[in-house]
Length: 131
Image 1 (tube, rainbow, N blue to C red):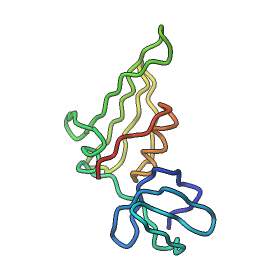
Image 2 (image 1 turned 45 degrees about the horizontal axis):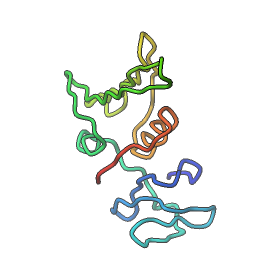
Image 3 (image 1 turned 90 degrees about the vertical axis):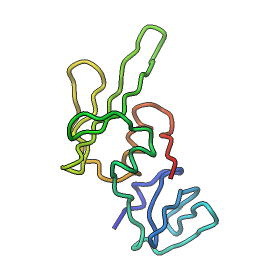
């Protein structure tokens, strides 16, 4: 069961086999687009990451058993780097996130809302999701 503390407005979740986007929530209710409100948190699930879901998030580079998204980011006028997300298809999880250079972060991200939250934390902008 997903914890309400994992959610942010804009996250995509699964409820009764429907993909819904969170537009508002509190400790009693989750409201989703289009016009869904519910208080049965036991049925709320994360949307598992698959290559198909990742394509809908802009991941389009392949290398062996991994699908990549490479984003060019600029922290200032002088600092540019590439942010690379690498999802391992057979392991069904993210292999790493590379912030440029030699440092990789090992991750245990299995659901779309987790990817959305990490992306926002690292970039300050929302991940485009076209479900």
